[in-house]
Image 1: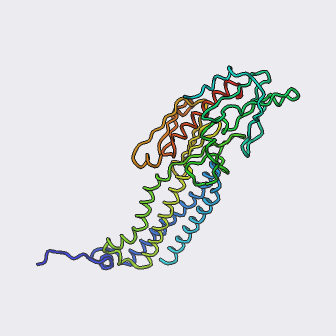
Image 2 (image 1 turned 135 degrees about the vertical axis):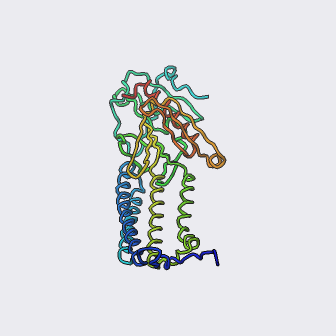
Image 3 (image 1 turned 30 degrees about the vertical axis):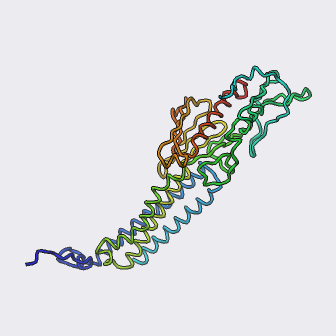
Length: 90
Length: 274
């Protein structure tokens, strides 16, 4: 009798109906939901950063204010693209 | 030995051709702060081989009352630190004397920023290291976690993309915090601007005449080499202590603050303040 237990691969772990009551497809669907939800929250964070940068630039106006504002908008645009990619690709 | 700036009464009033300079962008002078024409005008004194304290005097001329007015002096006239520093246009500078193009909320008309300070860039090293680790994390994750390769490629791609987006947001947030957590020294006040989180802001002000004590502290090998330290300013204002943390050239800043406090006291003695 061999006492050692070999680690099960990820796919077989989720795919085994004996271990879990759902299939690999269901697991990935749940994972997709969480990823899209997390990226949606991050979108809110991106909007908050825009607001924060606006507030900061109002507090201290400097020659780099425009650069910071552009960077904040680029960050928001990238966030939207990633969120959209998650929605489409997954 | 520090000059006795309060010894203006020993000087005889005499015509001075030295008219005060105005900084670019200065607002029109406040006439209400002028000294009456019968007030004895101090001649100033010498400090460090440079004439200090003569900028407030006006030329004596009977034909016009304006020549008897005492005006707000240019900081270069009473501050050795300001006289030695050049104006900076670098918006990312941590030590920015006479910054051009920088204004702050609630800045008074005619109030000039003498020194704009941020923490020394060395304070950014810890979060930069964290960001570097975050950049390498996906590769380490695939190497360390055994079932990572079993995750479908499209999920891996999106998760890595999201992770790098998170890293980007973290770096951007840290840069924002470094850029905007700043200290401002004007010819009227000191201002400490703090952003503690995304939406929480605190601005502390203290007029120069409320400053009671100034002390600086430098410690550590790296900070000593880079001339970085903390400055503690005790005030009689609502905020009892201002702490300028991890700033460059703390001795220069301390000296400037001392010069400004002396000038403020001098203004009060001469009646140049309302």
